[in-house]
Structure formats: C-alpha cells, structure tokens
Image 1 (cartoon, rainbow, N blue to C red):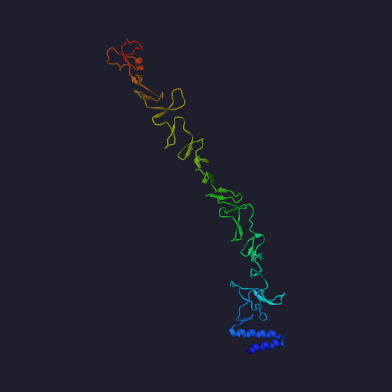
Image 2: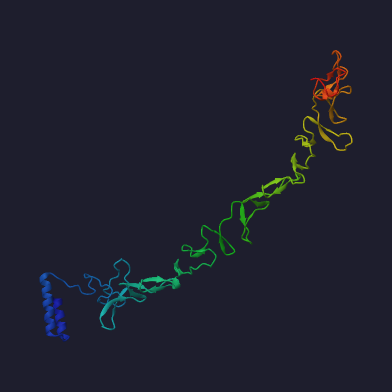
Length: 341
C-alpha cells in the first residue's frame, strides 16, 4: 500500500466512514494492483472525458468544463459544462448556457434572422414556412399575378428567364426582333420611322417626290390607284387606251407599228396600224390603208381598172367579179353575178 492510499484511508476513518466501506475500498485497490488495473477518476488527465448526461468532476473555479469532453463525436465544440443536477445533487455534464439538449447533442438556441430552433429537427426554421436566405428569414411569397419567382440566391422575387422583362409589375416575354417595349403601355412597338407589317418592323418612308405610298399588305412603297404607272421613279397617270408607256422617255406612245392619228370627223387621236396589205399604203389623212387614187381594192388587192386586163382579148375589168373572188377580167357581155372563175 503506497503513502497516498494510506492517507486516503486515514482521512476516511477521521470522517467517520464505516469500517466495512473502508475494507471494501482496500480490497478493490489491492485487486486492481494485482491485475495491473487503474480506475480513471473524473477529471483525471489519463482517464476518458465525459459526454452529455454522464457524471463528471467539476474543474477548478472558472473552468466550467471540468471532466466533460470539449468536443463532440463530430469534432465540433461540445458546449458542455459540469454542473450539479438539482434533483439528485450529483455532478453531470449538461449543455452550457444558450444551448439545449437535442438528439444527444447541445444545440444553440440562438437562430439568425428571426428564425427559431425546432427541437424536433434540431435546426433553425423560419415562421410561416418562410425560407432562411443569406442568414435571414425572408418572405418567399411573390406578388400574385406578377409571374415572379423567388430566387434563393438573391433572396428576392425575380422574373424567370422565360419572361425576363418586368413592366407594370408583370413579367413579360422579350419583344420580337426589331421591336422595343413601351415603358408606359408595356406593349412591344417598332422604333421611329418604322411600322409593324406582317410581323416585322419595316420602314414606311417612301422616296420623296416619287408619289408612292406605303402599302400595309405588301409592306412596300407602291403607286396609288390615281397614278398607277411608275416610270423614272415617279408615279404617273395611266396612258390612254391603246397607248403604251415608253420606258426611256416615260411618255405615252402608240405601240410599235402604229401611229397616232385623228380620223376625219373625230377630235380624239387613236393608234392606227401602218401595216397595209394588197398593195395598199397608209393614208394619214384617213388613218386607214388605201390604194392609189387610180386603183380600186378588191379581192384583197389593189387593181388599176385600166391596166389589170390589158393584153387580154376582149376582156374588161369587172369589179363585181373581183369582189366575189372571181377573175376580175370578164367578157363585156358577161351578166353580172355570173363571173367565171
């Protein structure tokens, strides 16, 4: 028996401990010495520390931890201190001030941003199911009908990527290409000097001095009905019936092979064909084709009654037979209407 153990027994006898308890202590010490065993006393640096709810040995004044473990099973601070339990009077490892026992660990009762500790889940939760965002409880209800969604990164209501433009408190899809949003009406509109035509913004400015107007059907500048002919970049009135527009001079002219001519008794010029047949020539005075003054037109040809039958024995020119398509040269006594072929 060492001196320290002897002193302990002596103190126990002085304190009035029963002889039986002292003998049991001596026997336990002797048994431990015989088998090389050593009981770790609370607070003994060589013994194990105490976990939450286990009996502990108080430390020196000002060191509340005592023989309680400084770290928990996960390596974090245990937040324990050795205190006397009122109902038993024994010292036990309990949670320090500001911490509560939850699922076998000491959890802080202090939560950030208006959150409170849920003792069932041992986590900080916001009231009314609001999210804990960036260390604060924020409302996650976005304005009804706005189309906004709550962004857990920025902790704010924002428009989604499908409708990223906010106007009038509503999220809207981007405007079509070429259009811009009117900040007052929130409508998509074309820019200055352009109009929306067939789904696209196009310029409605027509060339100055051309007389053209913008057509909302074709989305282009065209000549109006009052001046439908475009020539030389200018809208012009339609040519008179029978006349055509000269693309070089833009003047209204008669078509090729015809000339402008005013028939006798008329005040209106017309385009008369200058192409004549059967030996006829164009007569600008009458605007028609005619034979020479000493000729007659019959059978599709111009005939000179004096020379057509010359050299034929006892034959003369018969215009009636000529008009019937028969030989114009007939016997003088040939009855009319009985022309020989």
